[in-house]
Image: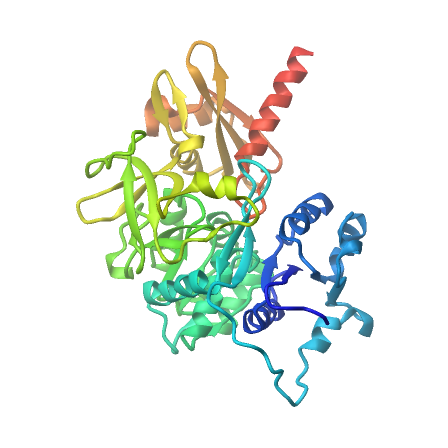
Amino acid sequence: MGLRQGDRVASLMPNRGALLVHYLACLKAGLTATPLNYRYQAAEIDHALEVSGASLLVAHVERDDALAASKLVSKLKLGQTRFGGERAADQQLEALMQPTGADAELPPVPTDTPAFIFFTSGSTGKPKGVTHTHETFGWLVASAVAGLGLTPDDVFLPATSASHVAASSFALAGLAAGAKVAIARSFGGDEVLPLLRASRPSLLCMLPAPLFALVRDHGARRDDFRSLRRCISGGDKIPAELEKEFTELTGLAIEEVYGMTETGTAAINPTADRNRIGSIGQLAPGYTAAIRDDQGAEVPTDTPGRLWIQSPSNMIGYWDRPDATAETIIDSWLDTGDLVAADKDSYLWFHGRKKQIIIHDGSNICPQEVEESLLEHPSVAVVGVIGIHDLVHGETVRAYVVVRPDAEAPSAAELMQFSRARIGYKAPEEIVFLDEMPTNAVGKVDRAALQQLAQSAVNRHLA
């Protein structure tokens, strides 16, 4: 096909076993796998292709409309490889995966060769290309194997998108440990519950929002989860209500983990019996951390500060963005931008993203804490909390709420009182009801989109 070591091969693929085979092929050949979020639209696809300089795109035929609207796909040096169609012409990837009878002669791959370019969620600007080499990604996978205690006896179901670092590294860690890996094609109960029953996984990984929906699915039964020894979740704070409902249904506790595209899974509760509810766990094998104040000094125990990570798993930088890399990695330490505290036993406790903290009358309010208080209400399905500029208070707390379809809609006043009874002055002063919550490319509540929504509402009012 004309590909050479170091060439970037982009993929716009849903969760399929074929996507993992594609990653393995790229790793073996020294090509740089460049996964694009499957929900990307034409402009986002073009941004990722332009940043990465990809030569080839592997894409599912059901995204043909978005690809047709792209300005860059037709200009790729090696064009497209299609997947998933009913016609032979649409099954190029399937054809490439057929055995030929002879192994290709491939040169050794240097460890500093870029293995993956993963794109950030874009919550603070256009997505950046997080670059992991064979060495950094190898350490990342090895840490996951050790931190999760993976063995050949395990069946691992990472029910999140394999276009992101968590599911891809967890799936490849499972294979590296000799375990079986189950692939969820989507993340609703209609897909995950039958997969739980058929594959009987020992480990499950899901983001909080789809895990909440799974627990509340009318078809979910305790026996569906009986094979699990661990259920891990991360990507956002685990609401106490989710923890409660999951335990009531399954008899297990959710084990919270912490990670970033730039670092991989940096913290994990060490074992199920040493899990501390509400904590993101202890540092994973191979990671070192410092918790610092705004002046760069390390903070005392139980004091929130900015989390810095040092690890051989850390990215080498943002692709073609030395400026952004220099802002994030300083003297081999990576600035996560997240606020955490460490207790006397070295368990870490998440206190929010520095850029998302709401400052109300001089007090810091973590949006996730407000969201948790509202999620305890039986009628609330999803919550997103942001700060709104206020001349008197600095910022006021606004909550955007989606009500469960099978529940009676509460009033805004009722929800504010409900939250105030739990978190006092941190409770929202405003409630806005939405039919659907905006989410970013990785499925988290998109607070940047909520800020834009708030700004457009202000502008309409002024007009």
